[in-house]
Length: 286
Image (cartoon, rainbow, N blue to C red; front, side, top):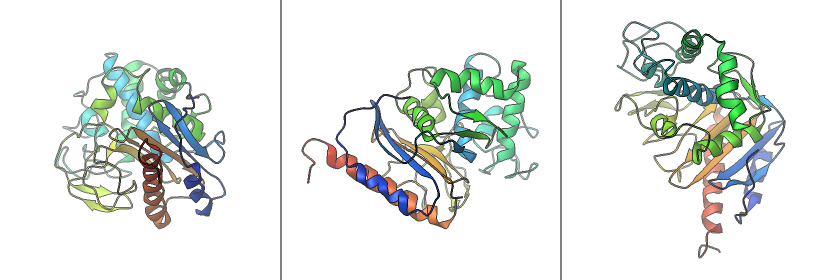
């Protein structure tokens, strides 16, 4: 579990999640010192859905740094590489085979991330789930989280562990040097594509497994989040954003599936959290 910091913060803003009509909803605010505030059951395990992709990307990039494979190792459709698949530029459809040439457009793909898990497991000679546990979950101390499905969407765990991941992405101590910076840098700049649930984005910025806010609109993070904000959301009603400019992260797990409600509720909460943090800074009260 990440340490709790002493920042003054109006935690009442997090109570907004109680109006989301979810049976279970938990959120945590994290800064570079640790946990700022939380609301809801921190230790209740829920599906992360596509937020899993952040952890899968970390495992793949650790594999690259360990020499197990390279970013330019062929993977997926002809002409596609590990780099393409991490950046949703390999040409795979959402759940299925190739629908475009690699590097032409940004097509969000579960198939691409499932392929990454297969390729990494073969290259390392170990099941992907074992690698994920040994290289990410256990070193981070994410003891309540486990992979019970595909590399694209199979993690189940509590918001306490999602907050731990957020802290590592915001202020890395266990991750290899430079990994977060690499993952949060736009790969194949200028590609347009559809952000699921939020429509066509041009450009549709993505790093090596991390979605980057950039100039996207509409978006599931807040209007006050910086363009450098990165993270992911999941169809299970989960999200994690990390805003390096604000020095802040927001982690959320619910049991209400993603829908139109989230496109309103998540940005509103994000902006309320950013505002509450700004008001907690010296000279910004009132």
